[in-house]
Image (cartoon, rainbow, N blue to C red; front, side, top):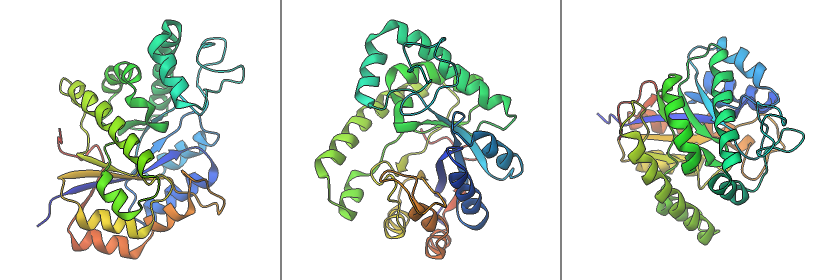
Length: 284
């Protein structure tokens, strides 16, 4: 029997009521096993209430340190956010600032802990930690995040290592951009992996969704599931019930895939075990 474990996760839980509704439907009617909560999303409190009433849904923290809102007010982290409390959108600008600005790093440490603290205050078990735009694996952010995630009881952390060959075999558009992203994340995640050795946090061998963000359509996901050889993998989606999605998610198509009977059948046929970070064996 195939003992491979798969985590099926939804990002941006709490971003909007439409995303929240999609997460609950995908969990109750589809294959979704977990969700990553934006504790600064406009509908985060509704998401918490829904998660409390659905204990079978594992919930982790979707850390926001770019392209979103902070927990702390501008007066406490003026180097991080604008006067409205919003982070910059440009990941390159953010990454350089975190490397070279000491004042920014001091404020960043406060904000990372504030987001973890807000999550823990909900009373929900902390399944895992990942990050908006994958900024949680920025070396400066990761060094701050790792001890806090462990201290606050997280069971796992996402290292976004996608399969470039499979993604390009399915859709060869934007080859250079996908290759550059895959190489950069591969190097960074290799460094992050070395830091995990001294912790009790686990991670999946492979993560699918990085190179198909907002485009996790049924044919691609079925191809991933049919070819999966790693002992463990995470597939993450950006579902919404809204017909008006965005290029990188949220996407109504992602919800349709999570509800697909064909996807469910592949999981059954291959005897894949639907899992969460709390039930994932050490995969390091």
